[in-house]
Amino acid sequence: MRKDFEAPENPDKEIKKANRYVQIGCLSISIVFLLLIGFIIYHYFFSMSSLPEGTFVESYESPGDTYILKIYRVNGGATVDFVIRGELLNKKTGETKNIYWNEQKSKVKVRWINKFIVEINKTKLDVRKDTFDFRQQ
Image (cartoon, rainbow, N blue to C red):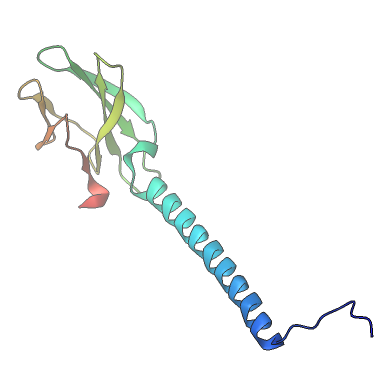
């Protein structure tokens, strides 16, 4: 008798093994999808790197001539008050980063305390490490 096809010894075991691969694949796709959604939410709702540009108001140079703080006023729309964005420029490296984001402030009072500490609307920040984001309060 000729044997062209051999049936598996335990077909239930083969089916369970195939189902296990499908489950692992679905779980992997779900994890990747959730990570992607988490990244998008963080980037657009919590990160200071994607803030709107706004209208330039004024710039303030630090003592020691290392930093320039540029203040922008962002229109929040018809139902939201203005928002203030503070962008720090490191003159030595050319790097910029947002360090201040506060709502309901149409006017800004900026005062450099020393070459690393700036006070923006009564909020003191060490420009080397601190940021202020009203959404995190």
